[in-house]
Amino acid sequence: MKNFKNFLFVSIFITSLIFAKNYKGAEYRTHDTFTYGRFEVCYKSSQGPGQTSTFFTYHELGEEGSSAWNEIDVEILGRYRNDVQFNPITPGQEGHEYHCYVDFDPAEGYHVYAFEWTPGYVAWFIDGVEMHRQTGEHIESLNRGQKIMLNIWPPVYENWVGLLDPACLPLFAYYDWISYSTYTPDSGNTGTENNFTFQWKDDLDSCNQNRWGKASHTFSGNNCQFLPDNIVFRDGKLILCLTDNENTGFVDKNPPVPQLAWYDGEVIKIRFSEEVEKYSSENLSNYILRNGGVISSITLGEYKREVTLEVSGYDASIAHDFLIINIKDLSATPNTSGPKFIDVANPPEYDYPLKINVGGEATEDFLADQDWDFFETDWGHVSGTPGSTENPIENTDLDVVYQNEINNFVAYKVRVPKGIYDVTLMFSENDFSEAGKRIIDINLEGTYVAENLDVFAEVGKNYAYNILTENMLVEDGIIDLHFGAKQDHAFLHGIVINQISTVGTIDEINKPKKINLNQNYPNPFNGSTTIKYELKEDSFTNLSIFDISGNKVSSLVNDFQNSGEYRINWTPNVASGVYFIQLKAQNICQIKKILYLK
Image 1 (cartoon, helix red, strand yellow):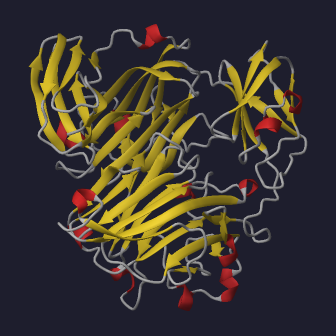
Image 2 (cartoon, rainbow, N blue to C red):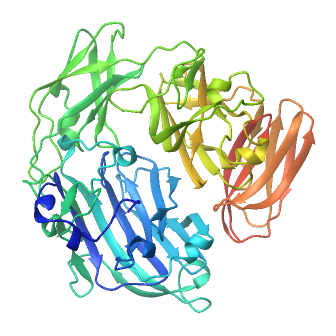
């Protein structure tokens, strides 16, 4: 559970400290320990910043202290709607976390998360697909018996998880089942290459006291005390509860509160503190829009904390607010909101191109960086710490931008009107002097724009390197960047955003690009597939295939090519599974996901 836990609570924490905790959480753990195997769970995480719901294994420490630390995590931080964190924590309490982009909200539905722990690797899976794998000496040091654990808790580390809003309590994580299979190489019946043998599955209909225990402790960095009463079995699910100190258990006594209303140029959206009931949230009589505009319809989205209002006659140059009343939550006995006024935020107005000095102050025509706050800011980084260098940067006259950076972060967000944008990401490797020391994945609006990016391997140290993504459609009013670090930590120096159009038509999206990688055909495929791409200018071109762990399995093109259309046939000699085609040319990177079925 990150690098902040220490379960030496029996001898360290006194009663007065325990009762000083602000909240009550929950932890469910096995009595027995396990060494190696496949660990699997089906659960729906808790939503909202300031807390995390988890599935992990952990070696309880003895006299050796942190030098014996062994832990393997699946952690879902409620502040993200598209992220799952994997983290093996090794002796010395050394974390090796990887933030995995997912195309779903883990708090909106059940998904199967698993990890395989062997002497040579740890691999993480989501819904049966391997998403990340780690090998090396740090994995070999994971060799101690570990208990299976799951919990919900609010860390005090706001830079990691965000700020917990008490108005959003209680929060719940729902677990459907857990299974375990031993590691039996070459002789199993499940997992990768059938190297694991199924042992047991717990459907979590009730507490199996022979296998599981309910924790009642706390630890440094945890802003709650674990409470057995916050572990509840209901309707075939195990429910872990995060509550205040008075209203514990699977009980909700707080009504929903509207937290933010914003106009995106076409519609008004309102976000509530918790999931709301459909009939009351879509009832026109529960919303009064003041200072002009007529509400014609209201729709509760899949993310049941947000409603979308179709409004006519709305003038964004005039200040508006809502009076909202009688919205019900989803509790067994619904709580109903009282009258609440909330202002409507209008889309930000920028001078394009919009330039941000990520990790630094305002300089030249670049805006200063800031922490992202969904309710307060229009751009900023999510988690992370700033860094800088005084070394001159080659290949640019904007040294001051490339000398500042934000690192060890997960996401960057910029609020913009709905439309089409070109986005340039600015990098310079200022820390490492050899390849393989820092490797990151970058996802922009649901599409990978860089996979296994090693800036030093591309251009060397203290050298400006940009990634341009053209004609990107933004429909939800926020440009959403997600970073996953496979080696060391993610970093970024600057962002330049150019608005192409606020209309967002298909013709504009499909206007000619400098490069264009088409989806392979057929896909999925068995045997061979055809990859088509287009270059608008003469350029050095690299076309490669990577597996889902980021390993290059085939280099198809690595040469200078003239402008034009190209077709490449690929007949793989690899295992079935998900792979990625990566096209790099003219300082632009495009990626397509493909599926090979033998």
